[in-house]
Image 1 (tube, rainbow, N blue to C red):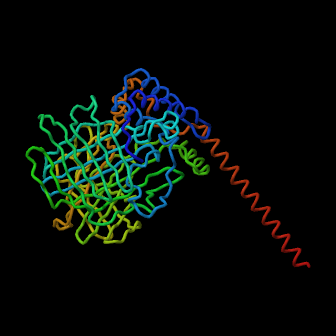
Image 2: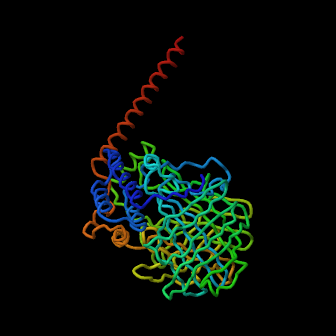
Image 3: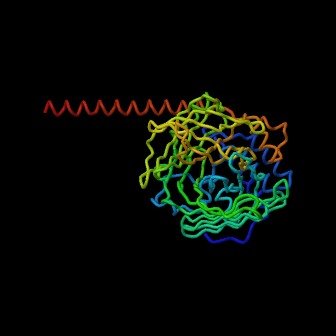
Amino acid sequence: MSSSMYLPPLTVLRDALIRRLYKLKDTARVLTPVDIPRINTLISTLQSTDPTCTSLVASASMIPNQSCGFEALEPLKSSNPLDYTCFQFGQGNIGWHFAYGNFGSIAFTLMFFRVEMGTPCINREMDIAPEAGVIYTVSAGFGTKDGPWTTMPATAVQGIYSCGKQTFSFQALPGSDCPWLQKFTMSQDQGLTQIDLEWTDSAQSTVGYNVKLTPSKPPVFQGPKGCLPCVGGQGTIYWSYPLMAAEGQVGVLSSAPMLTGGVGWYDHQWLAAGGALNSKILQLLSNVRGMFTTPVPVRWLWITLQLSGDLQYMTSTILSELPQIGKTYNFTVVTKNSGSSVSYDTKGTVTVVEMVQVGQQSYPTKYSIVLEDQTYILQAGFGNSVVYLPSGVLNWEGPGLVYDKNGNLIGGGFLEANQLDTADNLISTVGKRAGVASSNFTLFRQKKVPICAGLWSLTFLLLGIIFIFMILVIAAKSGYKFISSHRQA
């Protein structure tokens, strides 16, 4: 993929998004239900408002069955993560480059997203290059030791994304709806990652960071063949540099010193969720389960530990409720990277020790983590480290410090807490940015699978079981007759 200098007007990307919604309506079947009122509301809103990068990203975030029409996620064929350096346009509906750096006295976080407007098929129909058919968003912040933390406003832009062999580069083209953004470029060449981000803060100072991250060890898949997991074409694919050397400037750029000796981390991840599963049996089972359970917002804790002795852990746990002090959760995923070895079978737990309220949301800021009979204390260390997701929701995304149970500093880490708000507040936040009338917010509440879809799915499953049972009975009888006839002979 080479760089594309042509960027379609936002009205064209809006039309691609509308076309995607109409095609989604056409996919509605009894066994693959689609929320038609929700789609109609989004179409009406898009058609009646002038598009901005911000409103288009928010609208894309509110689509039901979001991954419908995109390529299914499958285990990666190459064993080299660098073969997937670039954004994998068309694979899933969203992906991101992520990085953080900790210099001891100051730290930063960056999340650089692609949010797809049209599906690959729609882009071909409208002659839109894959890298031009998306809106890019930038989530960023930095903080000094013990605070304060500076959060960049929610930022959505178009830009020039270029891709080569194990290399990419991006240059943002700031728009009128993000006047604070002065500059954003990001590039990677065989792991060497450079980020140059500048924005105007509330005091009208130019702040941000100009940093370089150099790999200290090879990249790793964070799940077997990159999958974490991949089930029925849905899931997430994910690889990382779990240890990088960081250098550069962070803070008020006119006076920030050049820093060296920092520790960094880099991720590339992409996601497909909310579409029909490409396994018929799994789709039927999903429908039956969904008939009885009301979905809740997807929330998770994501935690890294970078310890002495060339040991790193990546851990995460899915939350069915908002976290509470004293509550212990089992890790859903643990990747252990020790020296040159990688393993995925470590078990562990995380207990929330302290929380802090920022705005309407409360976030964990201190954890007690148990891995392989060792206890680690991970403490947020750089102020209220929140950044804006593409939807406009605030996440906690901040570097921290790791201590042993005796209080000795033994490394660094990272704390991420995702979508820690009520379902209605989450809908309100993104709905306002999309321009949806508040009277229609209730349409976007998550619902159970319609009873007709659940019952038909259950019927097909039962018929399938009966059919298989009958085949087995017939086969057993035939085998018995065959054996009996041979014995008589």
